[in-house]
Length: 81
Image: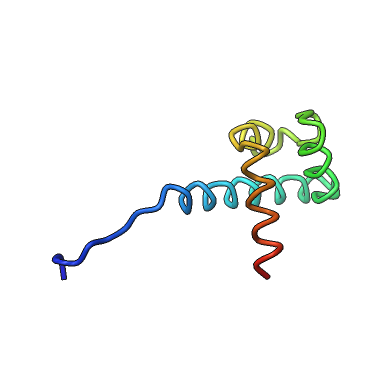
């Protein structure tokens, strides 16, 4: 079994991390009573971190995600469906 070549994709790992962070931020916004989609879109468009709550460290987490990469992943996911 160990004689086969295994591949590792940094891109897949990065997209998984973005999804994990976005899910955490979405949940934190929901818990605080915000409309998470509107708040995340506001953040993406403006890069103003005040759109994201500090609850569960969401504001700090979202700043680890590159907005351009996030938009690329979102458009790709939208078109793949």
